[in-house]
Amino acid sequence: MAYGLLKGKCGIITGALDEKSIAWHVARRAHEEGAHVIMTNAPVALRLGKPKELAESLSAPLIPADLTQLSDIERLYDETLRHTGRPIDFLLHSVGMSPNVRKGKAYPEIDYEFYFKTLDVSAISFHKLLQVGRKKGAFARGASIVALSYIAAQRVFPKYGDMSDAKALLESIARMFGYFLGKELGARVNIVSQSPTPTTAGTGIAGFDKMYDYAHKMSPLGNASAEACADFVVALFSDLTRSITLQTLYHDGGFSAMGISEDLL
Ligand SMILES: NC(=O)c1ccc[n+]([C@@H]2O[C@H](COP(=O)([O-])OP(=O)(O)OC[C@H]3O[C@@H](n4cnc5c(N)ncnc54)[C@H](O)[C@@H]3O)[C@@H](O)[C@H]2O)c1
Image: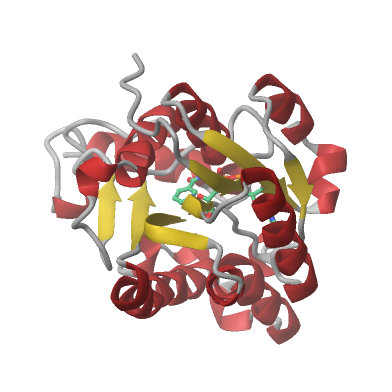
C-alpha cells in the first residue's frame, strides 16, 4: 500500500544488485511512495547484476560509481543534480564487502591490504559520499540519510570477521557526520541495523544459514525481511521522522533486546 510519503522528493539509492538486495526493495518502495529515484552501483555490478532492469522499471537514471573513488562520487552527484535540478532529499548507503570474509580469513589472521579494502568499501565510502555531497551542496535542507548496519558492530559474531569493525566505523561516521549536517542543514543521518537477510552480501558470510536460523528463533517477531526493511527506510526518508537523527535503529524483530528465547531453549 502506498501513502504518498515521498511525493515530490528525490534521492540516491546505492547498492541495488538484484531482487534480493535490500536496496532493490528500498528503491521500489521509494518509487511507489512518489519519489524520483536515482540509482547507482559499481561498474562491475552493472555488468554482472541486474540494476539496469530495476532502473528501467522505475524510470530511474542509473549512474555507475565505485564508491571508494572520489572522482566517481563527484560525477555521481554532478549527474544526479543535472537530473533533479535541485539538491536531493534522501540518500541510502547500502554497500558492503570484505575480501577477508570472502576468502575465509579468520579475524585474528586477516590480511591488512584486504582489511583496508573492507573498511574503504563498507564504511569510509559513506564518509566520502557525505563529504563530497556536502561540498557540492547536494543535500537539501532536512535531507534524510540512511546507512545499513548489522549488530556485529556491538556484539561478537566471529564469522562476520572484519565486517564487524567496518560496521562499528560506519555507525560512528553516521553519528559524527550527522552532527555537522544536522547543524548546517537540519539534515538527519541514521543507521538501520537489519536482521540477517538472504542477499548476495549476506549469504557470503560462512555459516549464514545457521546465523539466520538462530536470529529467527531468538527474535519474538522473527527475522525482519528486506521488504520490511524497505518500509522502515522509506519511513525514515519521510517527513514523519524529521526529529530522529544520529541513531542506530534496530530493525531486527526484537533480536537486539533478547537474552534467550523459549524457541532456542
Ligand atoms: N544481508 C544481510 O544479512 C545484512 C544484514 C544487515 C546489514 N546488511 C547491509 O546491507 C547493505 C546491503 O547489502 P545486501 O545485504 O543488500 O547485499 P547486496 O550484495 O545485494 O548489496 C551490496 C551492494 O554493495 C555494492 N558494492 C560493493 N562494492 C562497491 C563499491 N566499491 N562501490 C559501489 N557499490 C559497491 C554491490 O555491488 C552490491 O550492490 C550492506 O551494507 C550490508 O552489510 C546486510
